[in-house]
Length: 315
Image (cartoon, rainbow, N blue to C red; front, side, top):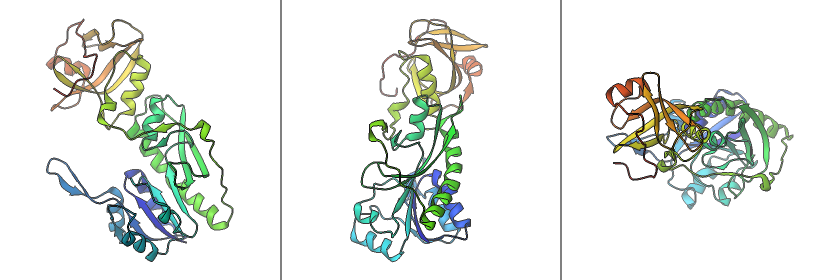
């Protein structure tokens, strides 16, 4: 079975490596997004998928879009039986979806139809879902609306961040993909339609999504902090300073939202709409990440100090 692998994000790396290590399937080419400027020097950086492909001697294609005739001709020349899509970053047009003999399969990091869209891992944590998983889906022209071939679930840890959950789902994707391809090759692959009435959506994140609104319950803010780690990062403002919150736990004390209830070597506690948060690890802009007690030695806060309650541009 000849396979074209389309991916950009790191979540697809274990799946691609599993395909390359398998003797059953031949990856005839890899399609990934064009190199993008990154870092302080803004030099072009290749995707994680491209690095793996080049290391394994695979041909790599990086069309800006997969809608032009040249891109379609390129894909056709690879003669794929199946296309595998994992965090590629583009919506595939119908002409591409119709090209592989057995169709296009998408690896989606949620239990569809829950959390369709670009940020399912973050959405699962923010929603307080007890579990999530990996879905292998037949792609159609909708946004994660195709029939499901298989799902595999896992529990979400009570303090797990999006970064940690991402890595576990990436590892889960590899055996899911191989099992799906075995079923497809045998002609026994199921197709289960999604119930769109149960669908939820997880739009692409923006930096503003990391803003902490202290009017919200502590439980929701604690989940947001976990969900926004490592990107875009949860943040707040106080006394004209931008402060990133890396980790926090709920605390039973209460007070006026945004008010510092305790700031000493034992705890940094901030009141929320319901309950409060004990901030564990924080980071001033331009400084390193610190435990709260160490942060307070260099940036003392008085009991009664108030974090900004409405968003304003970064000072």
